[in-house]
Length: 332
Image (cartoon, rainbow, N blue to C red; front, top):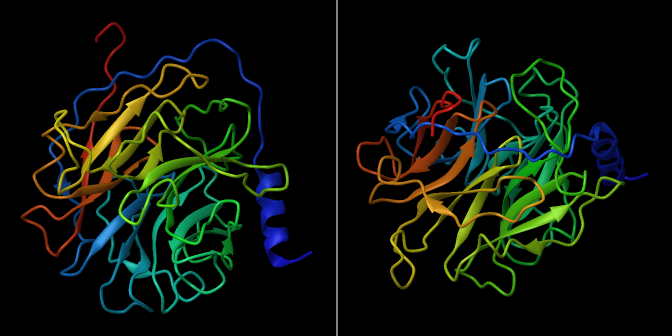
């Protein structure tokens, strides 16, 4: 059995699917988002973007072209001992993950064993592909194994990136106060971005692909209710599958044409069997007049990391964070 088959087989077997009750799932109510702030101790004078935070909230991964890397852009990680501690100095993930090409925009499975990311390294299907790496020790940020390409069902000859992984129920080695629910068919799904036809070089759409029993992924389908004539990128789905964030240059106020800059958007659904509701702009508290992009919703469902080139940062793109709080029951 080849390396790819072995990794995908482990990937398939480690996901444990539980049947859940069929009662409808209510979308959680939250407060408004707080004004975004720069993530301290992490940003540089170079590009810092594509953030993702580990399930325990103690490791912040991101993409950067700062000095000290292996290629055009690499994946870096900043760590902290406790959630309330400040972030430490970022470290490069090293040559197992990074190459002299470009790597970036990581994301994680909730069991903390799997990391998806984008790369244009050799061995893929096109200019930019989606890869996945497995680690046995979920507490070691430098234990990631040799990455495996997700294969030609998912990757195309053009641009494929920005995965968000939703499993029915994942094995977890730590207690977390986060709800898990099955997806529509009791199987794992990935959400991602591609500019394959019917899109185009500058028209990115959101796709969804179902995981097969052998760990591979099926042929993707368009998320038609979320896409527009403009571009939609980097989906990030909430842990219960009822809320999805992405960024787009669609007009924010219903105007014609595509905007010059991108905003972050969100769509919700009341149950996992429903289609997504019409996406809504995150609003002027979070989105500015610059490019706001690559949202990543943390496992606490209350913390959103993203990248922006708004004034006041350290470099061209910097990492920002905004938070919200659950509303008490009985409050709209």
